[in-house]
Structures are given as structure tokens and as C-alpha cells.
Length: 165
Ligand SMILES: O=C(O)CCC(=O)C(=O)O
Ligand SMILES: [Fe+2]
Image 1 (tube, rainbow, N blue to C red):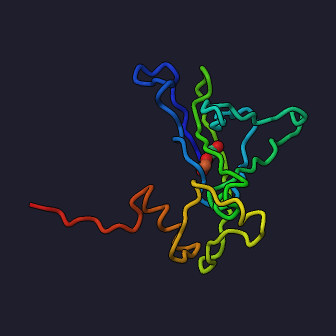
Image 2: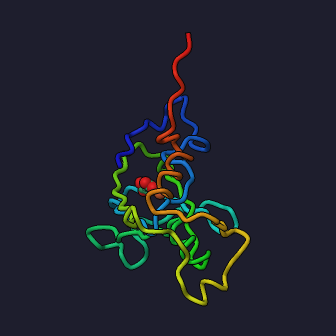
Image 3: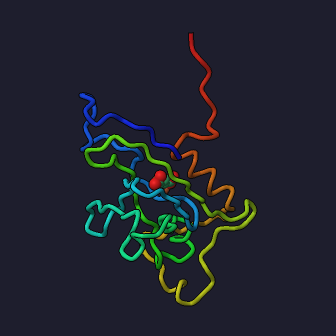
């Protein structure tokens, strides 16, 4: 992803409101995020509902040539584990007071299309049924799940209504 430079002194920019990527959780099981040094911006939503910046070079990695690979838990992992592992809500904000672009690479790990989405068959996971867990009567494949998420988010695959006179 390339987030282009935005001049911080633009009169129409309000960094309290304007952000680079809105709050979301990833759809798949795990996401591997590759970031570049000195290009911060990622924030996660903490359990007390505040945003916390994620360091590109966490302690102990300051002198590494490349930032470590960041692993994000996605919604599918939350579903597979009945919420034992919860997906992270995150967003990307502008760096404070600086006009810089940001580059990142996200690898979204997703099952093959035909795989049926169901919780991991273990007693520990089975016992963890929570209110949050979506109880699904019908079987869903990885492809069906992904298409639904894309449709909910972007209207992907939905018929455009014909233009009217
Ligand atoms: O660019 C980033 O640092 C995060 C991107 C992201 O969250 C996403 O593509 O899902
Ligand atoms: Fe994401």
C-alpha cells in the first residue's frame, strides 16, 4: 500500500478526524504486515477503547535494518477459536506534524475457497461459546465468507441499479 504525502499545513486537513485508513479488523486468519523504518501510523484499539500507536521498531529491534513483521489476528481466527484469540481493530493515522508518505505490504492469510468455515474441533474451543459468537445454521465456505465481507464493506458483487432517466 502507498499512502501518499499530505501536506500537514493544508487548511482542509484535520488530523483529529482525517486518517489514512479507517478502523477495521482484517477478514482472514492472520495478516503479516511489513512496514518501513521511520514510517509510523498504525494504531490498535485497546480493550479500554482508546487508540494506541504501534511502534515500527519495538524495544530490542531499534538497530535492526528492517522493522519486524507485525502479525495481526483476523476475524476468521476469532471465529475458529470462538473468541479465544480476538481480532485486532486497527487504523492508520497521519504521522504527527510530518508530511511523509507511508509504504506497507499486507499479506492476508486466507483458507482455500472450498474450505468450510467452522470452529476448531477441540473441547476447549467448543466450551467457549459466547454471545459474540455468530451462530451459523448454514454452512459457509471460505469463498462465501470472503464474498460476504467484501459485499458488506464495499458492495462488491452487488448489481448496480440501472440508470434512470
Ligand atoms: O498499511 C498499514 O499499515 C495497515 C494496512 C491494513 O490494515 C490493511 O490493509 O488491512
Ligand atoms: Fe488491516
